[in-house]
Amino acid sequence: MADLAGFSRFARTYHEGELIFSEYEPGDSFYLIQAGRVRITKIVGDIEKNIDILSAPEIFGEMAILEGAPRSATAIAEETVKVLEFNRANFEILMMGNPQIALRLLKVFTKRIYDQKRRFMILTLDDPQAKIADVFLMLDETQGSMNQGDIGGDKREFKVTVDDVAHWAGMNPAEVQSLLGHFSNQRRVELYADHIVVKNINDFIRFVNSKRKK
Amino acid sequence: MPKVGTYRANSVIYFQGDQGDKIFVLQRGKVSLNYNDIETGKLIREIIQTGEFFGVKSALGRYPREENAVVLEDANVLAFTVPEFEAFSMSNTRIIIKMLKVFSNQLRHIHKQVENLMENPTAVNAEIGLFKTGEYYLRNRMYSQARYVLGRYLTYYPAGKMAEPAGRYLESAEAALARYGDGKGPAPLVGSQASAQASTQAANQSRQDITAEAPPKAASAQIRPTDGAGLSDVAKEYYNAVSLFSQEKYQDALKNLKRIVDLGEESEYVAKAEFDMGRCLFALGQWDLSIKHFTAIVQNAPKHPDMGDILYIMGQSWDRKGDKARAKAFFTKVLSMPGDDDSSARIKAKKALNAMGGA
Image 1 (tube, one colour):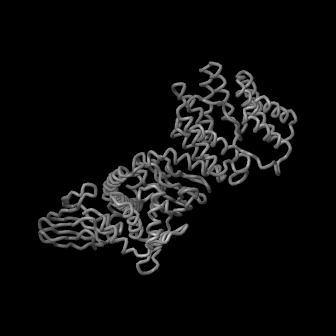
Image 2 (tube, helix red, strand yellow):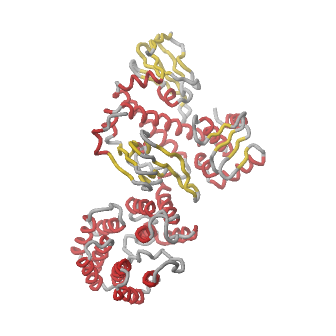
Image 3 (cartoon, one colour):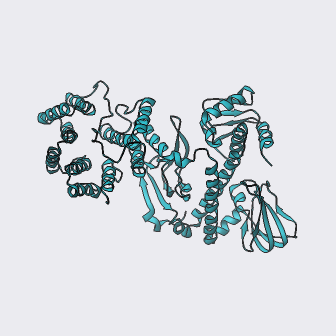
């Protein structure tokens, strides 16, 4: 474990149930967990969805590297949590003395850059149906993602809701609902309350490729 | 140990779409990374300098290569596996820091590109999103979470579209937290109706000058006790008074509150009633009486739990009387009190001071 004894001035303690930050709040700090578990949640529709549970030595809130970007999720202390709090101005100080942490942050950034690029690819498709199909391809590509359930063959199960898909596709949920309805009528997807099944992922790959401008 | 590879001019180290687990450093020669810009589709050729790393992101992030690495002049290239690179980076922090800077710039850039494509940029929706998050927590009786989020809303958007309902909700959350504790008590907001109401109100409100302070509402204006089950007679009487207050029947509320204070039976409700009497006096425009009443509380109970609010209303009273200097002194006092940075009293005091020109 990295030597963090000199960083007590960045130390913060949160108690069970306390919010570290809220979704939509402008964020300028990011956090390294030293002890305790942090729950990452998002309110979708009228339900608070758990996205992740993090523990030491994970990093969260790293998108604060983007000036003025609102938080995309809420971080709540699941129990007594000790973190180190950093911002754009002082993260270099921490990283200099702690290459393990720097490496971890580097990996987090590579993942975020990929996510954003992939998102960009979805958004630049003109065809709304192709956008939706490409959201599923993106979820399928993301290795080790919690959203993905490979249930054999070309069939894929995704733990996502219509609102999630709408969010990724940058479309309004009503339109996504209607287009997913079309897919469902064509028996290409099955819609459930808490998950969506894509019957043949290769069918979606061909469909998206045919719509993407070369 | 990382291995040295020798590549001839015009050969390719890796192709776009390859799954690669190697990270490279150019030692000698000339290498170009060729890819199409995701926005314009234009072919970009990025020349790698000697000593420079490439292939880092796809190897560390375990995703397909995003460019063709083409050798322009005979080259020596050092290839690290990911574990080798990790070991190397432990003693070469400066390289990692440099990469962090490059990657964070790339992240900023791509994030901006994505934002530009969104129909509703998230920054625009953040204000309403933050308010709704607070509302969600309040509705679900997660009072301390609601208090945090609504406090944040008022910090970032003191004159925002939702500032008025946010202030009210914040007071409700604080009152409910003090009275019932997290997760307990009657639901402060019911279903989506409350939400719809708040939105309509905010829409009406948005045209008005929101910085002008409305008379403070009773802390529990939003709380509707369930048919008084489990409540003592004193408590019922108190909530009855609070209900009168929220209907703006201040004289009647004042009478009821005075009865509770005179009776002096349950100290918790006596303290609350004393405090709310001052609010009634303020709401009735009795600035002198309000100041006198609160001064007595401050003298008799210097550790009153609502001290921040007491000082704030005293400041408001002086302000209404036209004594700006005294008003300012009281608001400043609220800010100098130890404790929670995000209490509604502090936020309101800060707002009031700003409105008066200078904190």
